[in-house]
Structures are given as C-alpha cells and as structure tokens.
Length: 190
View (cartoon, rainbow, N blue to C red):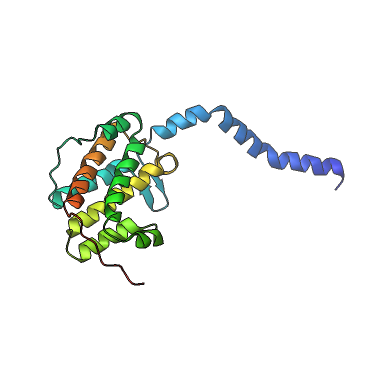
C-alpha cells in the first residue's frame, strides 16, 4: 500500500463520523429542545422520572401520618424554588441531613458519607421513628440525588411545582425529626 492509498483509506474511514459530528454540531439546539421535551429517561433497566418518585414520596408521607397540603413556611426556600427548583430541593435535604446528624457524635458523622441515612436507620431500629418515616426519608434522599444530577440523568427539568411539593414534604419530615428533641443515639462500635 502506497502513501496515497493509505491517506485515501484514512479519509474514507473518518468521513462518516466527521459528517455525523458536524450535523450534531449544527443541530445541537434542536436536539437539546427535543430532549428537554421528554418526560422520562430510561437507560438499561434504570428509569428517571422525578414526578413519579415525588408521587411515591407523597404517598409515603400520608402513610407516615404527616399532614400534607401545608405551604412551607420558609420564605427563603420558596424563593429559591422559584428561581432554581433543583437547588431548593438540595437545600431542603441538607437541612434534614443536618438534623439527622445532630443525633450522633461528630466523629461518627465523619466516618461515613451516608451517615444521615444510617442515622435514620438507627432511629427506626430504636423505635424513635416509624418505618414509614424512615422510608420517606430514603425517598427524599433519592429525589435529592435526582435533583443534583438533573442536568445529567433527567430529561425533564424539575418544575417549580415539584420543588414546592418536595419542600412541603421535607418540611414535615424536618418538623417530625425536630420533635424528637435532643436525644443522642449511642455510638456505634465498628
């Protein structure tokens, strides 16, 4: 094979991928609009639909005996939900997380990045919270993770209404946890 044939083969091999990239580059705005119109995203066996998970969380809140239909009283979070729904959800979760962390020693919190969920599990095991509240905390954590990765994993943007509903449920959970007072869980030996 001479050098002219070699170059011709290389050009032939990269022509289609280069043309495809060029078309995607030209149509990136149209593709983005098409993707943003999708209601759910499925990859393999995993499906991301924030609205469905939020509906499940509302059902779990009712099962946990939490009264819904209350407008959250935190004006700062409501304003944040107006401008950036995902960030409002992340902030609401961080408040729940901070409350959960109060129940254990600081060194135990530093040992695990999943510490808040582990604390919720221990609260359930000791009978301080119901299984329904525990599962609701888990659901809120899943929703928070979806909000964090909404630009990557979700085809649908998180709406203001969804953020308000999340804030409502998170506020009820927060109040339920705060009602436990200043209890301290015994340090876990590992």
